[in-house]
Length: 79
Image (cartoon, rainbow, N blue to C red; front, side, top):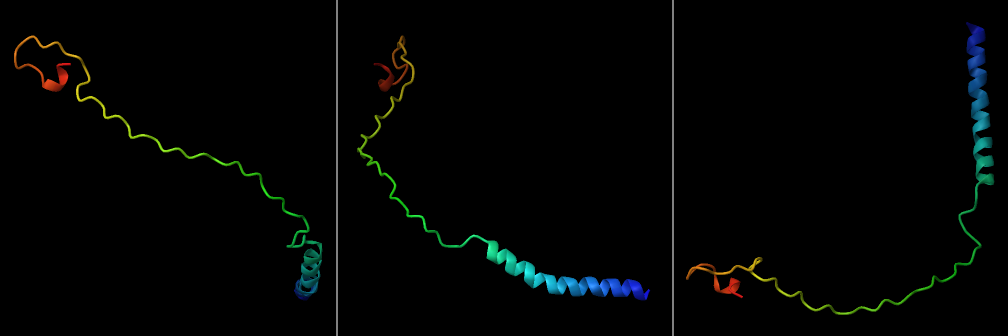
């Protein structure tokens, strides 16, 4: 029982000692936040904006109907 506790205590002590070493080593090997590269301006292509005319209203009658009887159909469809 004592040997198990001793092994556990040794593992805890080793992890407490190793943690700051691992963190400092990982910070030392990390890439820096700043960059020495020079940013080049991107090529900008101008876009021409043209006003579009209003859409033409659609006809009210979708089919051409031949009126046979008087009073059949509407005036808009008689074309």
